[in-house]
Amino acid sequence: MGEQFKNITLDNLDSEHLCCAIADKKHQCGVTTKKSWMKDRIDEGHIFRKLDAKGKVFIEYAPLETAWVPVNGDNFLYIYCLWVSGSFKGKGYAKELLEYCIADAKEQGKSGICVLSSKKKKPFLMEKGFMKKYGFVVADNIEEYELLSLSFDGTKPAFPDSLRQRKIENNILTIYYGMQCPYIPNCIEQVRNYCENNDIPLELIAIDSLEKAKSLPCIFNNWAVFYNGKFETVHLLNEGYLKKLLGV
Image 1 (cartoon, rainbow, N blue to C red):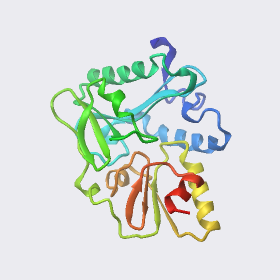
Image 2: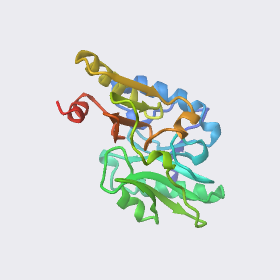
Image 3: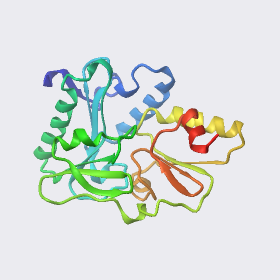
Image 4: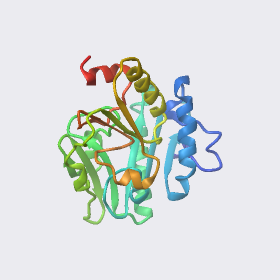
């Protein structure tokens, strides 16, 4: 199956689709934004590997040192996303993609691989049961969120202590967001419109540098939500989920 996959490079980035938002017109702005973000990441070792087909089948990972997440560790790869959907499920594609990442990590002499997950399955996070089959174990956790790790040398990554408080001084709805995911611009638009139309105070904080990402006060893959000063979720918010969060 290996010949059916391809990596996004600087040479093909503009012409290749990013399969996570392949068919939805409302997310095309997000695709453009993500491609712009990726242009500066590829030379850092950022990998986006996908099935050469019109479908959502891909893995995306980067060296932990340059991954836009608040995770500490030396010489690890960090997996942002591994996604196989629809009719492509059950064909071994997720296995092939993860095994590619593992082989790549070993070839680069990495200490291991890590990924954000949770005790119970959550949208937008890696499924723990699948990763356990390949030797991933819990390296660290903050309440329901878990940092899974496959270590080759016994070392392990960890969440910074600054994440454990899960609080900020601001009590209004506060969202930290990056541009690594093409769904985010539309989510921001829905949240902003709903809050403006219903007089709900909102603060949007763009994570637009590696330094900001590494110094965040919360669990983060590309999105994080606080309400009443308390960390709530890394679940991307559309209008419906926002109403649920606000209890309206």
